Length: 152
Image (cartoon, rainbow, N blue to C red; front, side, top):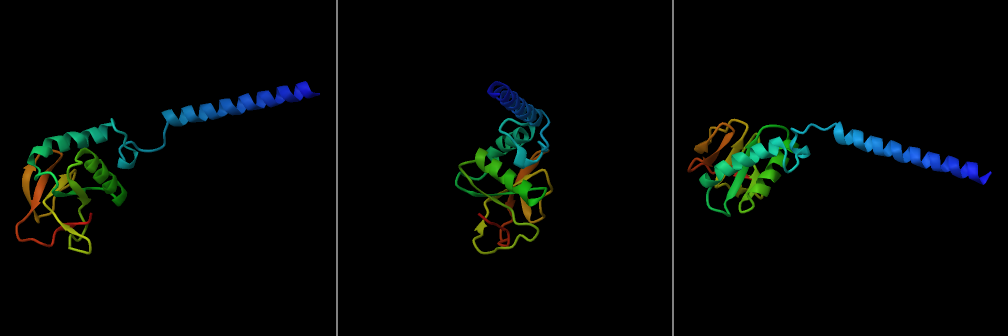
């Protein structure tokens, strides 16, 4: 009686293990998340590589290291947040924040900006272009416009 029970237990364990391995394989090859979403980006994906190329091209036109930069991108708040994190990852020598939207008014804890990185969207009219390419550009706040700020 012990051998058939042990054999049945072994078959059940091997079957359960095979099922879990198949599910893991399927998820690895048919993942349900959209790779274009910044929250699903991996270090060598197409979308982060595009952002990295843009930031590499923009770097010579940025203010000195230690300056306050803001990112202005399109999309929902979570996508904008993750693009800001990737920007901070590739520009560690700068303090990078999010551009407040839709009203860019000074609020508690806000910091005056040295430049705004605009990526994949149109800039506000309050911004003056320093450098542009097809993906976006580097902009500065027009002199005397103290209403534009960024939250750290």
